[in-house]
Length: 223
Image (cartoon, rainbow, N blue to C red; front, side, top):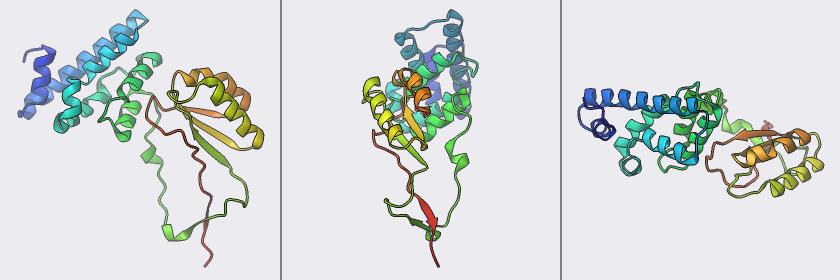
C-alpha cells in the first residue's frame, strides 16, 4: 500500500474494507508520530496545531461533506494522538477539532477520554428515573444547592465574567458554582475561581450557549 497520505485517504474512503482498515491504521499511526514530534520540540504554533488537526481529519473538506467518510475518520480520532502528549498540545487540538462541523458531543467525548482529557464519558453517569415520580418545586421555595453557568471565551472577557461570578457568589456564599468555559478565558479565571471557591470545567471549545444552567429542584410527587 502506498504511504502517501492522499492515497491513504482515498483508501480509507474506498469500498475495500480490508484496505480501508489498513489505511486507517497507517493514518492514525502517522498522526500520533506527528504529535510526538511536536511534543519533542517542546513548542508549537497555532499553524502547527491546525496542520496536525487537518491531518487527523485526513481530508477536512470530505470529512464535512461525506457522512460515510466522516464516520470512518471519527473512528480513528481517538487513537490519532498519543495519550502521553503534553496537555497544552492536546487541549489546543481539541479546541481546533471542536470547531469542525460534524464532530458532535458524543464524538468529542470519545476523543477526550481516549486522549486523557476527561476521566469518563458523561453517559456513564446517567441515572435512570421514572418521570411520573418527579415534580418541580416552586422557584421561590428553598434554595439552590448548585448553579452551572456557561461562559464561553468567544462571548465573555475575563473582567466581565469575573464581575458576574463575584456577584453570584455574594448573593449566595454557600452555593456550589460550576462554570463551563474554555481557553483563553479559563486560564484567566483560575485565580478568581480560587478566590470565589468555584469550579471551572474546560469545554475544549465545544459550543455552549451563554445561559445559566440552574438545575430544577426535583422531589417525589405526593400520592
